[in-house]
Image 1: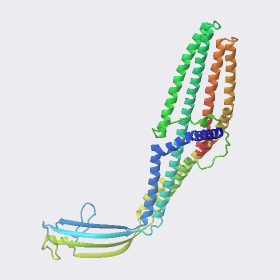
Image 2 (image 1 turned 30 degrees about the vertical axis):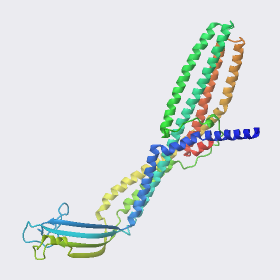
Image 3 (image 1 turned 90 degrees about the horizontal axis):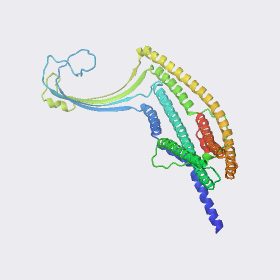
Image 4 (image 1 turned 120 degrees about the vertical axis):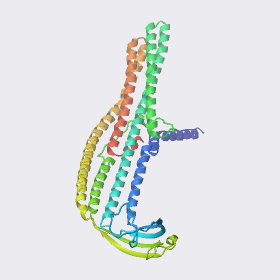
Length: 449
């Protein structure tokens, strides 16, 4: 019976630890799914995908249908005029103006198809694809930046909450020493000033504890804002209390910031190709069927104005058209020169991003190595300070040392606990920094688990 109970308790303990171990990772997943900025980036990527689909659909022919009915005069004249806001009139010229109104009608179907674009369509599709890749890399970069920002906020909250717990422990130490000093003073073993000094230190420790709580609540509010979820309970991940052993290798050359800059360079180059191909001719195949109705008689005049509502003439036709932008070269060349400058700027930016990432990786590697070494020494520091304080406590109880020495030992212990928390937080931040410049948050999460 005892073995079954122990086994069940062990299973529950392992389950609780597994749940606790996933605290930060779970919060990070919720934040990534719910944060509005990331949702906006996902929609922008989706819009870029739709643009690629739209450019590909340009191969399909267009078919336009129309119907019109007019009620107008029929004063026509022969001659050329510039098209614009003047509506054309069909038919022969009339000898004189007349203000008689008649009806006219028309219906048509017009099919237009561009099966051959001499590379224009392909260049537009390619530009849209690079735009899609750019949107995807920018989404990945935004997710990475948000995850780093959220994790850093959580680490700040963890450090502040841990400092609050350390301040609470220090407050209890002063409270215990205050009660002990009262007993010693009442028995005449210690002067009354010891009790008064301990009371002042105890009140000060309560103030420090309240300040630490306020700091923790401030960081918690930042975590909750970045979480994008108001109802989720935010706990403390127990794995942040331990040190890790990390093998730092050379990061892969796939940082989303670098990939984003490369996609931008390729997209600018593709736009230049699109400009050059805009000078190529256009081949349009078309087909039409239309009907006309008019009340105007061939010899002029009309019988019934409403006769024009019925169709009286039908036409069909097919054909092709080749259009060459003869005078477009000079204007397009200026745009090509502009695009060359944009390509050079994108290449320079890409080079700068690569150099900056190389520098950041070097700094991050050194920072992580030193942070790991410091974190390995932190438990020993706290252990030594705690041992020293316990020895001083025993000597004070025995009347071998005065109050100042005990207070100094307690202050050293509190300082060691606070420094240990800071060192552990800096270790995790250094690990996060290395993951950020590597462009891979999995590196951080794997060490967290």
